[in-house]
Every structure is written in structure tokens, then in C-alpha cells.
Image (cartoon, rainbow over all chains, first blue to last red; front, side, top):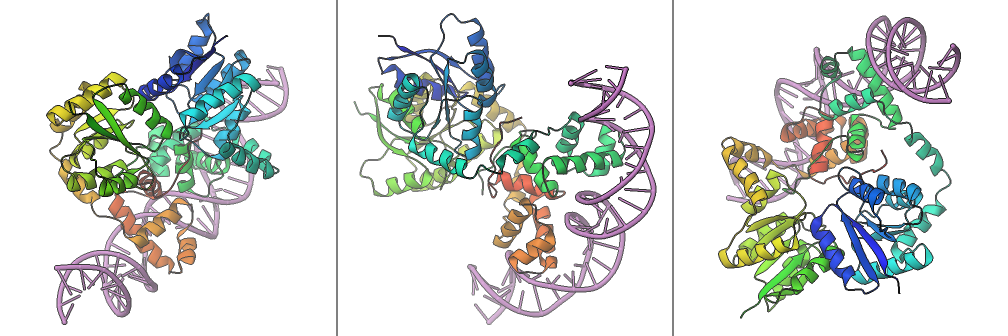
Length: 226
Length: 226
DNA sequence: TACAAACTAGGTATAAACCCCTGATTTTAA
DNA sequence: TTAAAATCAGGGGTTTATACCTAGTTTGTA
């Protein structure tokens, strides 16, 4: 009987080690590689002789995140099944991952048994979703009539200069100060900021800051001292 | 030979399971409990007959985070050794955890062997830090002359009303709108906002939004579609 | 009960942000 | 090579935020 070849992609080594032990106990599984991020995975696939059947993919990773990696691999290796394995349970994460080619979506807050079951189901039938995720998908289908327009607006990406300005806005600089730093007229900065407000659909700087953080244009460290 | 009793505290079940398997392979370890968050751990300790020798503690958890939990347990059960096990590698996280009573600080991006080694060292000698963490602590000691003043300023906590206002500011509402929502004069809102700017040492709303996110007063979901 | 803090709210000003408009130059891509 | 997008920059205006004041009322607590 052929074993199922598996690759684990996650930036935390300890998590990879743990999952690997869980999977190694199953006779039908064969973990052939661990990658720290999407880039490492793509490089591995470009030069390996032995290909995985299933990839367990985290979302948040340095260098290249899970969405980008899935997008690439789904094009270059459409036969490889990708299971998203992450702690993000938002609708948009799930639908995005499925959109770019994921065959399943597992929350890290799940049981080892469920991971094993999902891998087998995805290998056999091509896809699998547990009840929790199915419910989220179901709710999304119901309210998906007006959604397309929104995602089109999202596709209006920010230009280089707009990102420069956004970064400085997030660092609490005023229009005049930003103009000085970038060696342009404050009116130009205003223009860029207006475009930012339009493109990000924000009302004011508060919205811009949140947008910047979401898109990881600004790094932010949480603070546990309340 | 007495086994080392261990408790694992992490909000991801899969991570807990993985770590548990790694620890169960060692004969001298005995994992007696897994908790999803600080609250569950504190409740367990208040009614258990069998106490852990060592606790592996995550930082970011719902209900009660690792810093708060460590603070409480270090007071009520000073004999229990607490090892921070997290992916946050910032100086302030490390020094904060040590400050509230942690005996060691491990990054999740470590090896299973190192986890085993750290548990043994902490159990035998009372503390242990690997080279990477030691380096960060060392750098912090060198530049710790003017730090105390800063943390004093941080202790000026926000009042309930200020937090109300801050939340609405982060949701892009204007002063007038916030006044309507909270049934107070816009002038009062202004007063609160001025206090917020002082207390958080911000220049404008951008600073307030970042502060709110850091303190987790506002939830923010990352976006992987760049 | 008395004091400190928090909450409330007003006056008066200036600075900055936000809105709507126009138009020139450069870069990029079809 | 031509059209579209990005970048730059200005006029003129309204709205909002920020700064520096004062001060009454409520609330928690020593």
C-alpha cells in the first residue's frame, strides 16, 4: 500500500515537530519535508524528486505567507492537495484560501484525530471540511450577493508613493512633516492621503492606520501589560 | 525516582497535543493537565490535589493571558516553576515575564530537545535561559538606566470612559459622533481624548489607534491579500 | 467625612485634516 | 506609440482635531 507523502509548512519549529510526531504514528503517512515558510516550500518543490500528496500549510509566515504559496503551488502543481492549518477563523481567510486552491481548512484548535481524518479524506476525495468550517462557508454563500463589488475595490492597489505616505501617517507625522521627509509639497501629500482614504474606504487616519496594520505595512507588537 | 509533573497552557489544542507527545516520550516527565488559558489554569490549581512542578505557559490566550496568569500563580504557588513558551521574541515580553515570576523563556521556534533540556534545568536549578534569550536579556541590562521612568508613566491607566472613547476613535468616529453615542457633550469627549493623548504619549489619532491595538482594546484581523 | 480621582462641560484659538476642483509632467503598460 | 496610471502641485473652502484654560458634580475610598 502506497503511503501518503506529506509536507508541513509552519514557521514554528516546535509546532512542526509536534505535528510530525502525531503524523509519524500513522503507518499510512510519510512526512517527507518540513518548511519554515512559503518560499522554502516553493524552492523545495522546484528541485525535489519526490513530491508530496498533501501539504499542511500555515497562513502567517515570514518571507512568503500561506496564501501566496498556495496560489503558486496550485498553478505549478495542481495535483498536490493543500490543507490550510492555522488559528485564523475569520470568514475571509477561509474563503480566500479556498479561492486560491486550498482543498481544506483546519483550525489549529482541533484534535490530532481530526488532522489525520482530514488528510485521509482530502487524499481520497479531494476535499474535506469539518462542521465548524462548513458552517462559516455556508453563512458566506448566503450573504455573497453584494460581495464581489467590494473585492473589486480592494484590487485597486496602493502605489509606492501612497504606501510611503501611509507609513508616515501611521507614525503620527502631519501632512507638513511628511512633505518635508519625502521632499514634496504638502499639497501632494494631501493628494496621496485623499487617494488613500478613497482606496481603503476609510473616513480618517484611524481607518488608514488599521488598514496599514492589516496589510502589515506597519509592524506592531502586542502589549500584555494591561 | 520522582517524575516531574508538568502542566501545558496554550489556546491551540493541536499545539498542546504535539507538545504533550514530545514530553510523554520522556520517562521522567508526567503531564498532569492541559489548560486552554490562564483562567482555566488558575481554576485547576485552586482545586487540584496534585500540583505541577513546572508549567509551560503561552503568552497570547483568550480570557486570561500568560503574564496575568504568571503574576497570580507566582504569588499563590511560589514553588511552581513557570516557563514562558511563546513566539514573541521582543525584549519587553521577556523582561516582563521574568519580572512577574517566570523561571525561563522559550521561543516556539525551538527544538523538542531544548524544551526537554529547559524543563530539566528549571526543575533542578530553578532557572534556565538559552543563548538567544540570554543575549536579549544582556542587551537589556546594559541599557536599563532610564527605563524605570517610562514604565511609571505606563502605569497611568486609562479610565473606563477613556477606553469607551478610545474604542470609538479607533472605529473612525468623530468627536461629535462619539458624543452622541455616549450621550455626553462633544467637549467632554474632547477632554477624554486629550487625556488619552497625554496618557498614551501620542501625537494624534494614529498614535491612539496603535495604542488601542497593542493593548487589545480593539480587535484587528490581519489580511494576507497584498 | 474628607480627599483624590474621574466625569462632566464650557470659552477661545490655532493647527491640521478633509473636500472639491484643476492641471502639468513622468512612468508604465497595452 | 498612445492611452492610462502615477506623481506632482496649486486655489479655495469646511470640518475636525489639538491646545490651553477653568470649574462644577459625582464616585470611590482611606
